Image (cartoon, rainbow, N blue to C red; front, top):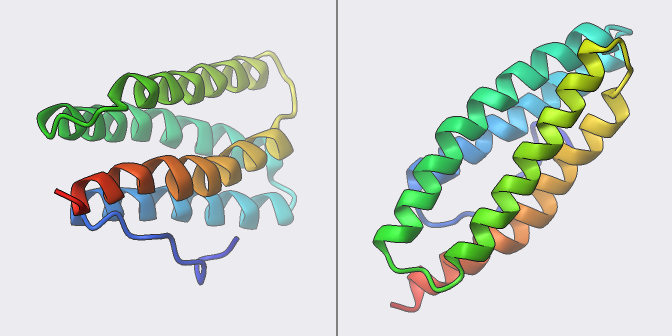
Length: 129
């Protein structure tokens, strides 16, 4: 994925803008890993991603709650799984491990599967109402 990659639109500007931040994080991570700065790039990306999930997941879950999204509980479980995986990777880095490729895979899956499928499910729900 690159900056030229476009994400599907949820139809909610704030959500779409936040999703673009995730794509930018992936682009940055890929660039710095390719330049041989995997450890520092991974540590930096994990810090940014942890801040991102704190704000984005809360915002998104609140929005889904206010709009009575019927799959809210399942969506929260997905968010929790991503958060747990980020924490695991972060701890592995702190222990001296190399998780650059794992982190790239996680963020790619997050973009493709979570945003591309799960988030578009609530976008479809909102659009049908």
